[in-house]
Length: 466
Image (tube, rainbow, N blue to C red):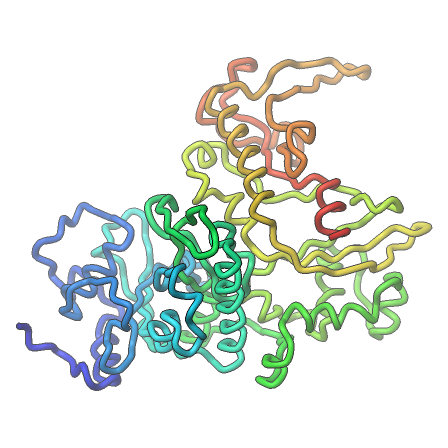
């Protein structure tokens, strides 16, 4: 038996020993003897850390790693921004959710809380050109959830439990919750587990902290917080109302008022031609300074979309998502795809409607895409991927009356799917990205930038009118 270089009964001793890793690498501090250093499997960093530095065998026990002091060890990768600040590379995955037992738990005796109430976090700088043994460890510290955050996390946990209790574990989405998510866990998200109150098996999932919340932890531990404005200022407010309820209550007094009236009531002047006008207007309504970020939105990775409705309630435009790289699209699996990840966020939709050329605030609503609709988007993603792989993007070129050429494509259109479609999202036709397979019709190795779009009819019928 190894004589441990720390006292397992003393949390401070464990943390001090862990902090000796700062600005070091596993190769230097651990000198692993039986590890194939050419392997960069996900999870390898944590396993070597446990086995060769903390000198215990990696395991999947339900108790914290340092059970004597109820301290759980977690390691996670960082990315470095140009300003030398660090951000999380991904969400922080915690323990597996046992669908069959969680329905009998309450929060204080839950597997989640027993395992994760006190975290020892080790963040390392991920560099794709290096072996994981040579990643530099940048941040080592303890994290205990602040009281207000914990109240929101408790509510998230209850939402996850309720969905499982309702026999809908297979419909769990990270968009269901704010700070604490239920992410797929296992071989490409394919491991299936029995669930209570439903015969259908559900993909294995683990509790996880959203990437935005992990960024908040990193900023807190490095004392490099951006300027934040808070929606929830006290624990009493967090206990009495959800973030969603507070936001909607702040917007409601401005319903059915035009922009000029809203600015007048707020007593502010904002440049209405600026790109961030609607974002700034929303901040003002929420009582957030224009030079601040909304703390709770950042932690929860909430995506804000402003939609302008025509007088018939149809959005003036479809809703666009980020441009996809053709080469990345064909290489990704659905469970790790960019569009699935995007659609599993929680959204705040802010609806304005044209009335005699004035924009009137009609409604705000929090939304995340239902499971069945995500499956519809998967069909669009599958077809798009196949079109690119087959090199069959362009099906024909037609000449318009003005003599201009228009390329007609095989990408899924609104007629193909009631939820989403694919079309250009570029400055012009020459704004292109490389193709993995040359287009057979045009012989081109590049193609105009495209992205996935939510159909405006879907937004009207399933988000605005819901």
